[in-house]
Length: 85
Image (cartoon, rainbow, N blue to C red; front, top):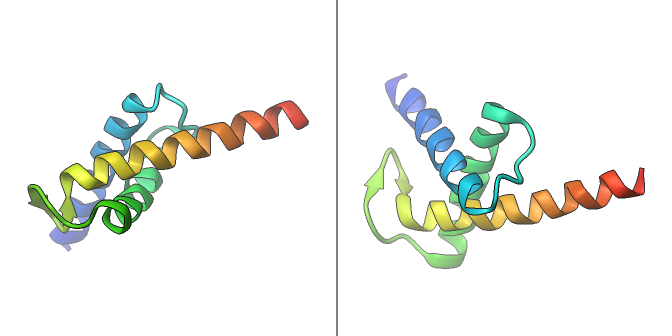
């Protein structure tokens, strides 16, 4: 139970850090940050591997970079769809 809570908190924190690095382009507030943190940790692990400090199953450095990339791409898609509508 505590592992899930810590993982969600880490996903939210990583999501907010990645959002700040990507110029606040993430829609969805805290839920969007959590989703971006989880997806970004996965993307960061695929792209950069598993190095640096590891907290609750998240390799912090690749997770932050992966989240910034994920948020940047998601923000660009959101802007594109807003213009099309």
